[in-house]
Image 1 (tube, rainbow, N blue to C red):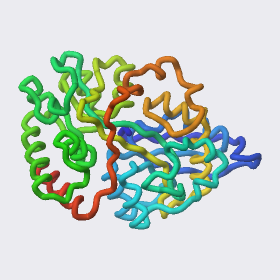
Image 2 (cartoon, rainbow, N blue to C red):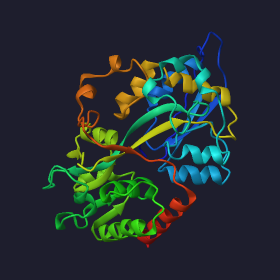
Image 3 (cartoon, rainbow, N blue to C red):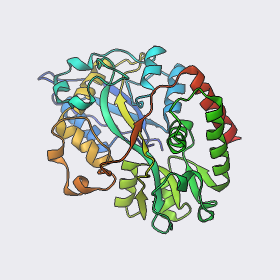
Image 4 (cartoon, rainbow, N blue to C red):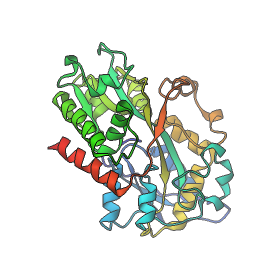
Length: 341
């Protein structure tokens, strides 16, 4: 999952899924810095389809834009708990992903997911975890979520937190031992109290420059995704990804086609392209998250195969967030409104 506005576009004319020449355009709306230019260029060269990429910073931003009637996008990349909302509200359309030629490369482990059991809507992008990362100079070891939610004085004014509630509240629930999507006002009041108290230590609510905050030393700890931490570490940032004993939030991002899409067949071509092991491996190598396609490991570098951010402890508790009920979501929104005041 990562999150600067970028547009990658080029022209070429070669082959499509079969032997016919492809034409036209494809407009992708994805998380910031989550669409490698080399992957786009490869797709363009193989299909002749001109690709443009626009970006957003959170699932909430994506959902709000689609709900507001945004048009012009052929593919978007929501996380698993937002897919059912988009289906229910008619924001995305069935495209028979199960019928694409490369669908047989889909890992059995990820087939028939709760959010799209027949794969009528979703094709795989990446999956990973949300936790926190910390600077080499931080005196702790990232062993517990207590370090993040009940920070020491060392972190006063040097803690960065995501600006939206989806993953922050879920991580707080793991720490407090509460279920995701709680409809209990008393439990959510405890979540609220925890986050309001944490606010005294926060330098920024941010998910676009959190790696920069760590690299500069302005922050000693920040919410983070595992793959994004690896990207920062490889760029020379003194950063470490935490695997707290209580657990981490899991997420699965998918390619889906908005109901207003004009280039549906080109979107399906891109979905099929991403289910090719070599292409998916390019994405995994670039981003450092997990993938759901068979045969990708043969294309991984030695570094990726041993990267700590991609190889978590075997006993790590990973909890995937479900889609919350309207009652639970209302409580979450109230909590976050209070935190942001």
